[in-house]
Length: 213
Ligand code: PRP
Image 1 (cartoon, rainbow, N blue to C red):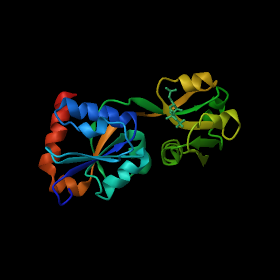
Image 2: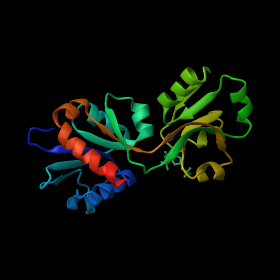
Image 3: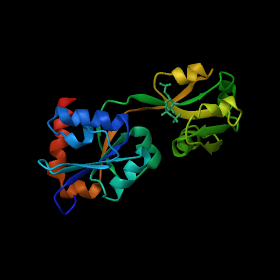
């Protein structure tokens, strides 16, 4: 908590932030300023002494680990990939999707025979953990920053490790889910020191959300 008594939330920009604000509204925490269309990054609710800021998803666990935010809301994909020193306290239930190994049908053989394949992903740590620690398969991991489905299409990689929600991106590009790594959804994370110092206030919010879900 900041010395001015404000509890600070870091929210992953975009749909996740909008869904989080909707959920908070439903438990009586509103932030009028935030609904306005502007380039503003920080918003306050003076009545409840709450502050909200919007950040790039992968930066949310960083702000929370360093205590720049007490609480963060971000996808489980980001929590796993960033592997920061934060507590995961709540599954918010929205943003449900899966982390999968995907590729053309022909790549099934390569996976089956534990071939040394190329794996393109926005999530190199998740991919590494899955192939090295769970499957004990040596692979080459190539980090990309988006449109990862291009990997197998332009022969950069044999497979990809990526998020699958509806499956339509895969389908439209002739790719399919080959293996499922884990399920994902939005998570609430908390700074470990904030848990000690502001446990009661954070506990009330967590309790209210849990009761509402
Ligand atoms: C995500 C993900 C897939 C797609 C999956 O990409 O990386 O490409 O959504 O959704 P679907 O199964 O419903 O088709 P995003 O739109 O976030 O953009 P990116 O490719 O630039 O990461």
